Length: 140
Length: 389
Image (cartoon, rainbow over all chains, first blue to last red; front, top):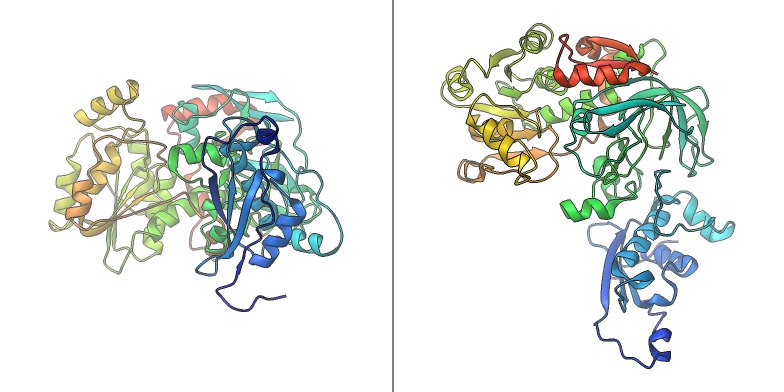
């Protein structure tokens, strides 16, 4: 499968989730949303597919978009979310999740030294079909 | 298994640690046959590199035999004899695709730490602090090699370990330092430091066509090896004014390329040394920069300063004015070892160079503590220690 046209932009605005915890507590978010961006060396359609399959951030994500990176460098991913000081919505934690997503998409595995503890490790990758095909070899 | 572990500043111990295991599909496990102590290990030993922890297994120059491979490693078989690059590189990210392997975007699990200090993270490195991954190193009986489908190079059986071991780091490091120096026919190259990387920088500068190579050090035994084995002219900076000597030797032009093969623990024979000692002791700078400062001042107008020595943080009195006003080019980087493995192996096979000329000591892994002490203090005319694991 190949994408035609360099100006391709997939806007997978799949989630527009109000923060359930915040809403149930009856509070409005004080801080503005944070955006994190990273580049993955794979085609936008493949990255979007894997994003939906692996769902690295779950309901944290308000908005995610996948743009073709200039210079034949794959896909720019931009993720917007409502930050918290601590826990899984902290910008540092989100950054680590995104880094691990990139590692899986590019290499099929998460770098680990075998010492110390990571943030969160994905479990076994789902096997079979399109996803496995995309994961096993990593980026082409 | 036995492994040489960092136990604090000026303290290493050979200890029993758990055997490594396959953790990822692209991993391999090696039985280490030979490993070496690098000058950059001395920076760890001396406590100059942050984020080391007690018990960390040291060593990023090693080779050995494959004893186990992960399910995604198709290019290696059990029993293969390989040498392993010190940078860990995935081979698939944009940096690896550009052959900038030491900038791999996927191999440092602690990239966030490096980003705090440097803005962006380089690759993970074996046995070289947690900021650079926290990977156990190869001064051990066994070592886990991530992305073994990308890094390890099978070496010909007829070449002994001693001739190919240094492909893991210092030969490519010296070579890259020379390669990025824009050496042209007729070039005069000056190399600060006659340690192992300096020796290979000298030899590589000649391989790349330099006319003359001038090497700067203060240890006579190291300068003797630089003269007799690598072919350099030498300057003892404790006896001679280096700037004046290079100016004289180059007809008043300055050296076309200056290579810093010293790094962050430079020693100087003048007031700079006291200045840097005091500033680093007070934590007002992290580097002792005498060598690179002098390299900049001795470089001709429009020349290239190539920094192979390791630096970690912030240096005081860096002569940026000389760089800007004299159109100097600064080149640096952790070595992209992967891209030099095959071409440099070919030079060894063809007999253009025998990298074992730098070895002065051969010891068992169990003797690592004595070896570190000797190499760091430059006693017994020590230039390079190879440990048999």
